[in-house]
Image (cartoon, rainbow, N blue to C red):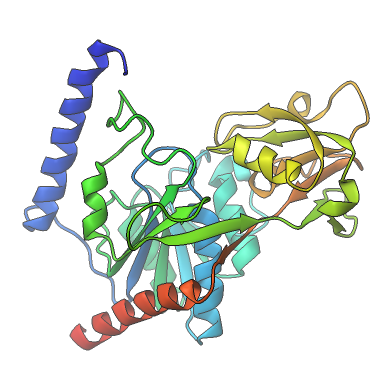
Length: 319
């Protein structure tokens, strides 16, 4: 149970969030509809749930189908307050770590900005015919045609309370309005939800070395650094490969310094891909990062993709 004095604040937060959504639903606040369909990949809680790997998966599948997707994200952790397109070699301190990761992994145009409609419009102007929003479920100023909500299968809804008494931005009842619900981790615990796994099989050296299978590090003792929403997920993934991990959790989107990745030994240091984009200039030969890929059981990936493309087709018939 959270401290009693946070409960009234949580109730007030919920009332404000519900009223804000009501205003957009009743068209009392403007929601911008772009000429291209918009797919939002978001969550109900603060912290990482696996949205970004799912966005990378979805963008790759849309490209395979012949679409020209673009990705819009806030650019959290960056100092730029402007709406802008991101280059994969931009400074993460300026545009944020996730935007650079998205640009490099997907090869698709990426735009950032607190003004989501304006940022998404940059992608339309750049020739994108579908916009995928990394986060932004609660940013109703950007109209959307499909919503995918991602839930951390380990932490789920936390203590069940809204901010600041708990981790939730909206109540679980919000799931009923989504087009699809994806559970990251254990087998889906919610009726009708898809089950997603994040798989990391290789480590890439930050000094430019070739990829090495994680199985090659089995039995070794390593340091692991993770500035993500759920660091233990990353540490446990390494342990599943037989690696002895000394975990060093950091706040999500932490600005890493040399002190965060150098220790009093020469043991290998593993980090997430999101952290790696901030460490390239100071890393040594014993620093590695582990990219993860979203995967699904059986034909679930095809069913999820079908939900997205049908929503895009419905938008096309209304245009």
